[in-house]
Amino acid sequence: MTGSAASLGLRSGSYGSLAAAVGGGRKAGAAAACRPLRGEKDRLQLLHRALRLGGRRRAGVLLLLAVVSAAVFSSLFAVVKDDSNSISIVNNYEVPNAIQKSVYPSTTRPLMMSGNQYSTSVVNKIELPNRLHLTYANFTHPCEGFSVPPPLVDKKRTGPRPCPVCYVSVDQAFALMPLQASPSPVVKNLNYVSEDGVTANLSNLGSGFGGHPSLEQRNKSFNINESMTVHCGFVRGKKPGQGTGFDIKDDDLLEMEQCRELVVASAIFGNYDMIQHPRNISEFSKANACFYMFVDEETEAYVKNSSSLYNNNKVGLWRLVVVRNLPYEDPRRTGKIPKLLLHRLFPNVKFSVWIDAKLQLVADPYLLLERFLWRKNTTFAISRHYKRFDVFEEAEANKAAGKYYNASIDYQIEFYRNEGLTHYSPAKLPITSDVPEGCVIIREHIPITNLFTCLWFNEVDRFTSRDQISFSTVRDKIRARVGWMPEMFMDCERRNFVVQAYHRELLEQMIASGRMPPSGAVVVTDAAPSRKVRAGSRKATPSKKPSVKRKKEKKSSSRRRLPKPVAGGLGAM
Image (cartoon, rainbow, N blue to C red; front, side, top):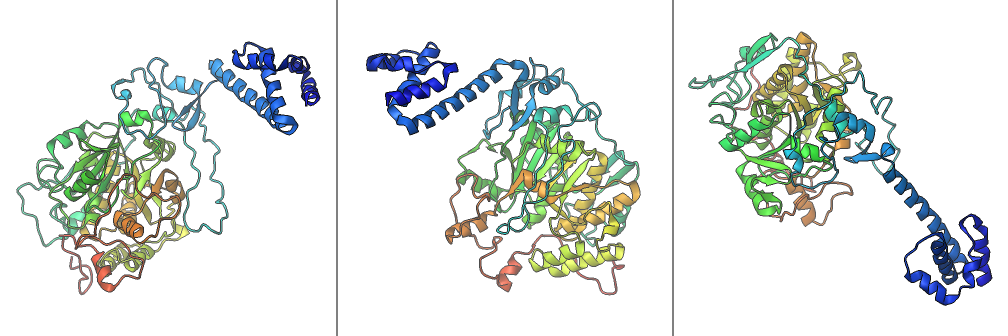
């Protein structure tokens, strides 16, 4: 045994020989083990002792582990020691330290950290004077040349899946933010119809919240001018949220007015979804972006009773805003108000990211702005549907799924067909799709994008709540006049930064029946006791084929008058 250990030691002569340590006896070895390691000799004695205890085979493994450990510790020590070559990890993205210092001076730059903590950072109190700015003209973009690789072939996994997306760091994204608002083509001043004290013409379609615009007013709103006044919800009351329907407390409205740069928003009405907590949000975004979740009183009561994170109208990063006097009975239609009219609820915000409540945001919002807006020099981004590109196919899919009354969908499609809507084909390029996956909207708040979402909302208010059906009609009418249109990115890119969850009641039914969701799905993001499905609520899709009665219960029941086919054509409108 002694000879074996000595021979192993002799092979590594550059580190000293173990032969001399062998004759030192057990006493010397014990003394060496008890005192601190002061030099190379002590380390070699400890290694020799380990070799004697472990035997020839174990000795080889231990020696290998020792060499690897020494290499790792040496490299770590070198990284810490050499400031000029250090790497700073910001929100799980590696960024050269020199680039970060060019964005913020070292004395004022807030520390960026990854993590999912819900507490507000001290960055809230840090001002950022001397902000340095990067432009795409003088910045070597780290994602230059990046292309999406072909999807992996996996026979066990079918259907849509995420694809890689190249992001910069939060520091870089903030530095690349435009200092001035993007130019708005043609329309410069956008005003909104207010009808305080005026009796609306109830013979027109739409709702009181939307102002019942006539067909003539609807058509006129597509005549793009430098200065325009259009219907855009909230037609009554002093201002959006005060006496308009969709009413909000004054202190909440005041807080919303203080939001200046970026708002991340979502909504749950009818207690239909679980609150999904954003992940991978930088401390900078926690301090500078606003996170708002709009809920009704029913959802608020459920969250209060079920969420251990609820505290002072906040659940994690989300600030809950309770909405009263809802203008529609259909929660889906009510949800279109914050989704499409965020510029009216947050009048001072420059950018917004809308996330449907069924989605969990898993990337920093500033990274999304840089990737999908600023890098492409666009002002409105939405993903296209992963499967359907044609509005007529989308309408049939909605009918098959019982999303809305079939007659109302047919009426809307026929109306658009008479206005010139055609099937999608490659002849429409550079338009890549007529059907969006509208659960995420990334936009800059300028007059042209505000006009687009106003007119899109008016279609949702006038016809069905299925906004995918009306999207392309509004887009094409505006594009024909000013040449502007939304950017539509791939659905797999959307799935890179959001994870889809199950609706609450469907999840509860799956758990109660012993059917667990598939691996990787968002299940429950906060402790929430299951409860019985209340009578009259929207039902989740059961495991068995739904009956005709249950299918009808899933359809819309808004207070607005549902459009019906008009005999003798559409001109009677």
